Amino acid sequence: MTGFWRRRLAQTMRLGEVSRVVGAAGIEFAHPTRASREAFQLARFNTVWADAVRNVPFYARWQSQHRLPATIGSLDELASWPIVSKGELQAHAELLRRPGRAPDRVGMTGGSTGEPLRFGQWREEVGQSNPAMWLGRAGYGVLPGDRTFLLWGHEHLYGKGLRRQLVAAQRRGKDWLLNSRRFSAYDLSPARMQQALEAIREWSPDVVIAYSAAMIALVRSASLEAKALSRKGPKCVVCTAGPLSKLEHEEIASFFGAPVAMEYGAAECGVMAYTIPSGGYRTSWRSHILEAVETDETAPRNVVTCLDLRYLPLIRYDVGDCLELHEDGDARPHGFRRVVGRPSEIVRLGDGTAFWGNLIGDCVKQVAKVSASQTVVRGAGLEIHVLAIAPLSDSERDLIAERCRSVVPGLRTRSLQVVEKSRLQQSPSGKIPLVVYES
Image (cartoon, rainbow, N blue to C red; front, side, top):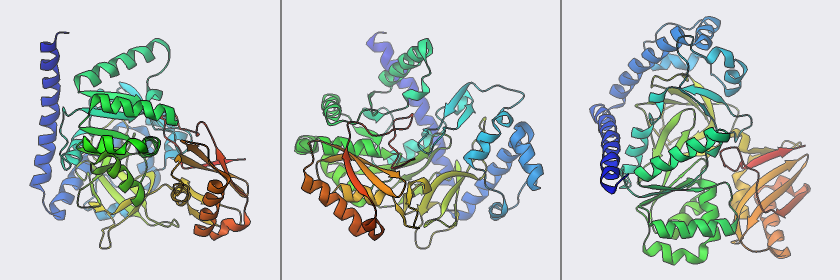
């Protein structure tokens, strides 16, 4: 393809993207108040629910089983509806198929909480979340067509054999047209992260996008190069697939000399929220209803309803995350303070001791040599697995252990070891689970 035709095709793709973003922005501009936004959501919900009951056997059965109405008159009514779990969908996979139309492709969640959920998608669903994504990034000055570097996974979606090669080639072609470059996040070793750093320098992107764990590994592995990058940094750094602590946030921003945005989404739900420069998250209310449901966890669970028509509707779906609301936050937030994490990231020991796994991560990062970590629970004891840019000394291991025991007193009577690893356990999408349970 000549340079002229490449530019014309890329411009056409970007114009299509921009037109969708402008349409989404127009909807948001037309609904400045909570009342008008909820009226919009209510109409979209009734359309999606009618389609789900009529065309997806799972939801026809769900409606009958729980005696749910054909329509609702207020979003408040949803609070009494049952919550759909990932396990429920997996247990009734045969009921998720629409009799009248096969899916164009099969998507899959990242598998960071166990067995991945496989779900059908229509071709037109691909890119459905892009308007929310670009509206979020626009708040940081990032626009379609900007040079983008992705430290990413998702090769698990490519399939096997010839299909894998074809999908990978298609992905490279799309990245070429979209002014993007992709670097695998499956290997977070210091040597590999140095190669990623060199690729970023060579590409000189406007935006760097990565899993949160991968971004921290990159910054920690290349900390000596901070000044070189901060002098010519990107407009913005985007982190996703896991929350960051305040110190990690500051560390990344300092390294790149750029603001850090957080994208909150899931493979099966799309982009649900984006941070805003002034602080906190703004939800994608146009395409999602988020409900903060109180449970016995330390923070309310996020229950999501997707408002776009899709092959597999998601109605009051427990996506598996806990949210921290603003002090005056509504139970259906249009904004919230932060994503706390997943209940699966709560470490639970036999004596009743329970704490968020990211507390261990914060303690481990007291030693600057550590680029990534993972907590492995074995019976009554813990092993903290770490990737390090140089071998840890005995005193550094002791410092990590002592810091953990001071933050979580219940660990003082537990076996706790700090173990250096060449690789950490990963999900099929390349994400690093914060907590792993082993027998």
